[in-house]
Image (cartoon, rainbow, N blue to C red; front, side, top):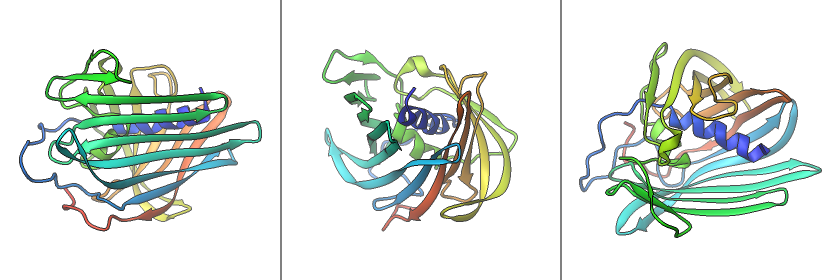
Length: 255
């Protein structure tokens, strides 16, 4: 598995592992959330002690998707070593009224690999399409890799609790579990923070399988921004550290 793929799988597992609340109401008002247009987080990526690149998460704007207003979010990973480079981009379009994912795009450039995938997701019929091909079965209230990250931030996490639920738009990857381990204070390049530490377990091979181990630190406040991630591998560790955080220019409200 490539550096970027490992990084995304860790970020995805973090986001997938939250208890599902009641279905979001489909009304005329935007959801009250702790993020908004203009918010940007930047990360330093290290393989062991070696700095290998950086990444970012940003709410770029409000966009229309099939007549629905969405938050357009972008997650990027870039860098590598002298013999292998990555430049990946993941985009999500999240319905501002329901919180469901309506569109998801991957643009992956990893070594000699160059892949682009475009997903259209239809919550009202619980189906999705990939690159314009035939419809496939999805789930109710679907979320993709990026939208799970933002959904996670709206959920209160209780230390000592373990949660499972099914909302990933590809049904075969459900269910997902999250264990809320502890609270602690940490220092990252972006500053010093109180954090909640969670351990994700996902129904797949790799570091987030039942035999794997990874920990993720979220800010212990109403925003729950991702501060740090550490994951152990047979050949070393892949770690992610927050460098900077720019709040949104405006948002509906926290929670």
